[in-house]
Image (cartoon, rainbow, N blue to C red; front, side, top):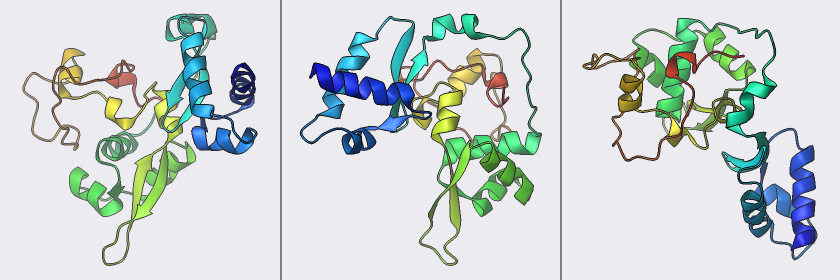
Length: 205
């Protein structure tokens, strides 16, 4: 088991993106149990400067969140996204898998090809499975890069209405259609991730 942990640790350390259990199984010798090695490594790295985190279906080493201030550069260049891109990204994140026609129905306006191209180019959105409906339209979903950027394990960790209100980003009685995205109210005891404030959520550093 110790040797398995070393091998998994080496693969994850060298990987440029999260690695799934299946991918680890393909790399390790026959008879290895990558899932057990991952579980042991996660416990071993708890509370340390580097932690082993689950990101989507994969695992990756990440700096402990409370030490992020040590990694900050003196200057940070941020690329502002257009309102159309922010709204489109929010709709995809909360309603995925969603088709272009459904995005347009929620927003109430047409979605330009350039907006979707920008999100795909940023690698925050990808094309999902086609719907088994006439025309077989493509769907759009958020990527692991999106989850990784905002410190989310899954899309379920996106903030709900109560979290957005608590952050002062929504009025206490918001309109039925917030930014064109009818969010679903979550229970207070839902397992919600501690992401960045929603007003910073869609800025690409």
